[in-house]
Length: 409
Length: 125
Image 1 (cartoon, each protein chain N blue to C red):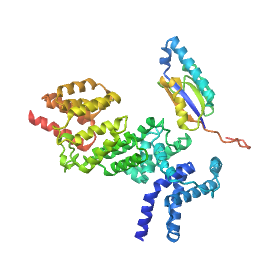
Image 2 (cartoon, each protein chain N blue to C red; image 1 turned 60 degrees about the horizontal axis):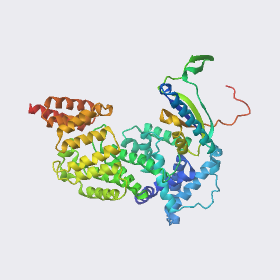
Image 3 (tube, each protein chain N blue to C red; image 1 turned 90 degrees about the vertical axis):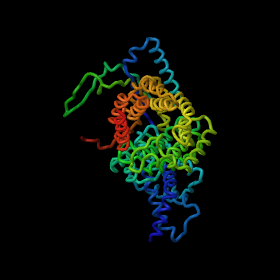
Image 4 (cartoon, chains in turn blue, green; image 1 turned 120 degrees about the vertical axis):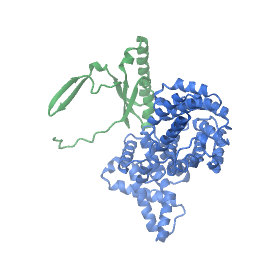
């Protein structure tokens, strides 16, 4: 019994996403495709024990699911609307592996379409691409399952009614559309890596899903930026066990015990980065990964090649100007032996609304003030940062710094 | 598939334009419509008079209520619309991005809902 259950589970795990992705294309509807896929797996469980597993299980499941879907359309009163889909059910269905590969990409580009809200893109990607159940996605995103289910239903309705195409963008559109997909994957990673609120800093499962998605994308669409994102995620993930101490307190990069960094993840990350750098142009994620690689290869904060990090931030700020990057660049300049210059640069950008509400901006400023011996101003900046953070460990970290400051006076 | 592209901008920005800039914008729109027509994407469209000319009508409990101005006072005002023929949302968005006021304000793209066929009995509400 349990062996049989295991077999069905692994069958489902191995084939369901590809079957679903292709059925969406063939049937032209997300919901119908999902029902048809379930029917196909039921048929497999009933038939394979006696008939034996077919040579190409994916193709068998797709063909069976397709026929189930067509039957569904015939039975529904809405059949008129899908009249164009009423192909003869026994028509030989062309199933080749290349088309199935492309379907995974079609699904990903549809789930990450810029006309959907970012929340919907993340939910759809986790649900459809990663094959997570609605309850799993909801708990991973700290949402109520009913709210999440509604969001997914709305997104699928928009895909159908606004006719968001189920297609991989053409070569010439790809540079514009690929960032949409990479951003969703990276947000999923970050959602797992650093919670915006909640008790613990690391959630293993979402980072794992993002890495798996990134790997699949790298295989299907071997572009420099995809490799760059993989490098960035691997190099960040390598630090997962050093980001918190045994009591759950947050540890900043400069104070982390680098013996806890996972060397195998670092070397995998470096390999991805080398592949990314071999392909031009060097994009956003590749530059960010290059910075992460400098950190990963340094024995401690002092021995870090800050000059190289400053140059990489210069390149990032030139090509992708943003207040957050300007903040990071200022900190890197401060670390490169010029804290006063760094502080001046922070003051120059402090008016930006995105930064004045950002706790890490005030924390960075407080840190530089502290190092320059300006205790009163540092205290004020730490307090400002405290007001703006909701994450338990980050709050306690800032409180600790404040206490240290008091003890000095 | 039919899409409506609703053109919104801040009328203030338009009012502050020089005559030459306004003239150029109109000519650019005319050329855009010609291009859309040639490519078979243009079904209909109109530019609208400024919002001071708008009147809003509501019927509540059988009573017709008429009020001056647009339905909602928003930062950007509806300035015109295009009825476009496009294969899918990607094509519709691409066409909309080339409507000149997209640079000044925003274009809302919405698929057209086809009404169901008229029934013989006639609906009695």
